[in-house]
Amino acid sequence: MKDLIAYCGLDCETCDARIATLNDDNKLREKTAKLWSELNGAEITAEMINCVGCRVDGVKTPFCNAMCPIRKCAASKKVNTCGNCEKKAKCETLGTVTANNAQALENLKNN
Image (cartoon, rainbow, N blue to C red; front, side, top):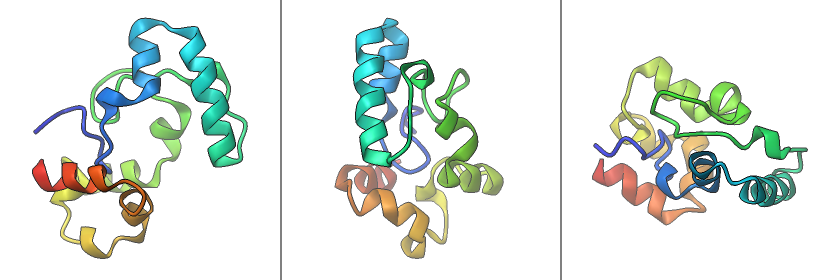
């Protein structure tokens, strides 16, 4: 199992928040915060862009750490990823990610 595949199937290894954190890249943090603010209709600041990955120990963005419904659900069920959940095929919450990201669904199938 690839540890940098998030519970939802997104690849944390390619996430700009993780890349900015590992490289201490403030320009990338600012760019990511601006994009995520626009996409989510919420104010996200560059200071919030610190994460090393959903399923690994270390810092997380505020959303990933405390608000992500997928992460909360998977952790409560003690599954490695949503790919190990018996309800994944009918899960509307997971569907919000996999409907827009075919690679996330593929990652869940392969892990």
